[in-house]
Image (cartoon, rainbow, N blue to C red; front, side):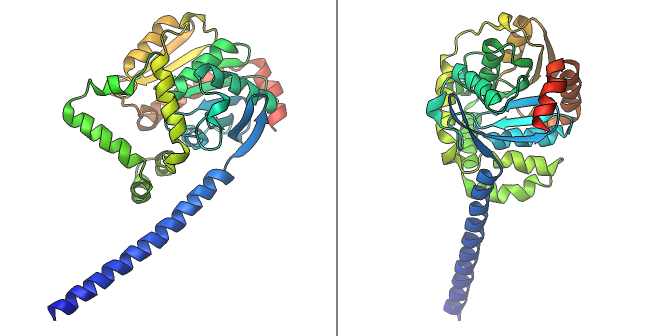
Length: 317
């Protein structure tokens, strides 16, 4: 009898495993298809770029973090939730369908943004640099000042950045936790189980969208690895040369991109304002969205150019 019970338990376990595998594989195929169908490809003067457009109004170009893709820009736009802007979410080179080779450096990515605007017949845009999107957003404001109506840095990298150097400041248990956390986030079955929990959080749909931005990590790994190499090469950007009005948003307790980056920007960028989130983490833009998103809306509306209000709306609509 005992043997029979073990046999039945084994059969039930095997059946459960087969059901999970079938369901998981089906979900993963749908997610893979979604990543392709929710974006478009366009050939620019510098090469092919993956992007998505949503909304109507002045254009806000969103440079996603590391890792990420155009889907992170989409999640940010949904969190913002203002239909009076057009959100241009891009996949930076090395992420998803945008080839790394066309623009591996932040400077090259800034030029790629300008080429993308050309191809979409958009004259000007505000640019949002989220985390690892910060260097290319800064470079866009420096290299294409006539195209950049304003700059927003969200927990953004603004100077030399080394993940390993930051990790050395952690306690040993925290280093181990961070290492395991990063590995788990690149493990799709973990994301599969996390999504139902994410949907239970405030703004649950956006939380789920943000969790999804690490899905299919092999399609994002080249971009992430390249980002880490490029950020270590950063010395000093000529931040005092930035002409665009600049809003800097950063949590004071951010232990991934340190608050010192925000302080550097605020001290050197001429037309800047700092929105410091006390005790805010790297995800302050989500956890403190009720404070940050209204501030972003006010800032963007204050710094719309006449070109954005007329020319861009006409071309997008």
